[in-house]
Length: 504
Picture 1 (tube, one colour):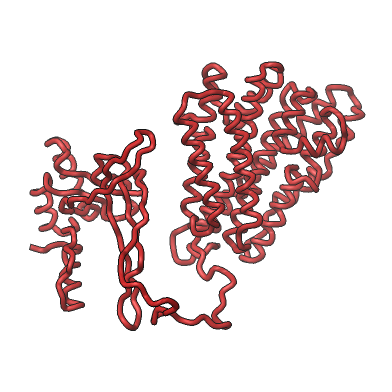
Picture 2: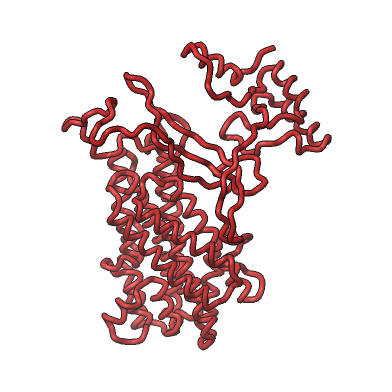
């Protein structure tokens, strides 16, 4: 009987090196061969069935845990697509102690350890370290980082080299071998950096708007301003439509079922960051870890609006730190450029959508509404230092729309995105964006004087605001379309060409 493709691996090793393996390999068979499939189906209760390819999404199945009906269903699936399955003997996993903070005690967890060796002209050298993966649950029989597992530091003991002695395989790097840019930057890494930037800005915008709503709900002294902020949250899909306001605010912050909740976006941010761990500095990564730890600690307690408000204040500062790391802590390679493009597109889309919804609301002339709009645009201090006056519509719009020195103004971000895309497209030989420059011109030509001296009274002011809101929404839609086009041009991971950052 054929042992299957994977069953040959130990024999191949014996043939190549002329010696038996010191450690036995876990017996594994690919079910794409008819004899192997028949044997696997016969011994199904004694085997672990796993996907043959990483792209498959089903979890490993233990035959012993399945009832007769479930085994029959699995057998039918295996007969229909035998090439998609691998059968493996059950392995007895080692155990290691893990500290459980919530229980205040050590508990055993299954582990799987990997050590590594590197090849040289003089033979193999075992690296002084390794990776130990730890299962997430006490009864887990599969050790997987994708299933919530963790890792432990691992030391591999060996003879210590004399002080100052270099490994013979180490090579000297000369002047002609200096590297000043990443020689290979896969498109998937660039895409994750792009979305890391977008989620940084998305979490910041969500946190600021939720802080505005929560602060005004806790104070309870301005229901009109609170209602305007709530309507904005609804229009941006950051706040669920159903239920009482306290429950809706909690869902927007911590909801598992609300896909637009701040918690969900923080999880996406953490995932994107984990995919580009090698591009982030130690301090940058530590800031992300602390942010996640604080969010998890908050979820473990009963929700208190005062604590939630404090958490949002700390979160906004943590996200500002991530922005600082991006600006001052990363080399200016293509990955960094896409990260910054992601941040700028997300900020442009959020600012434009928020201002469009605000201008259509009944509080466009309300002082309290204008004050929280400045807070949302992170421009309160700038406004106060310039005008020493209460918030008024025309200067607020000038600061948040047309001020080319304010990084939180729509025109500033629109011009910055346009220039960045033009440089990127020129470098990769891609046609320039045609829609954004026109929008830059239309927004730059908007005359705030039409709000000061209306020809037809209040009706003409309202008409001007509606037209401005339409333009802002058009800018928001265009920024989303730019993001889609970037994905199609640079993030199509289908062949060797498209995996090199650009595909045209």
